[in-house]
Image 1 (cartoon, one colour):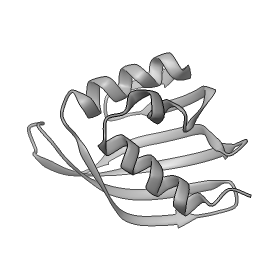
Image 2 (tube, one colour):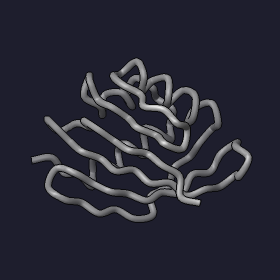
Image 3 (cartoon, helix red, strand yellow):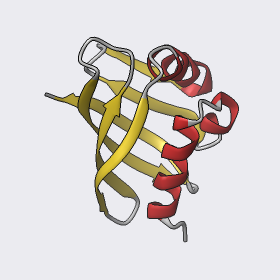
Amino acid sequence: MMNIETFIKDWIAVSNSYDTEKYLEFYNENAVLDDPSVGRKFTCHSGIKDYFVSYFIGYKTQTELRKLEIKENSAYLEVEFTGEFPEGKIGGSFDFTFKNDKIEFVKADLIH
């Protein structure tokens, strides 16, 4: 049984270190990341890599966990993003579904 809290904390740490290869290891090969705030769905490792490079590495985004709610094979978290984007600091949320101890689907959005 995966420890979702540890998984999420490790995922955030890897995100904040901008390690693209390690970041992708958290996702199933055919995972989907849906981000209405940018108006796109990113599919598979190739799409999720584009998302990570553009919005996290590109804006030097750092993510800090604010709230985490865990269910059986899903998790909801609220975070605070800081980085080189117009707002400088903004809230965000992630809604995860897990399969085979990896991320199968995640909906990412901004909290204004």
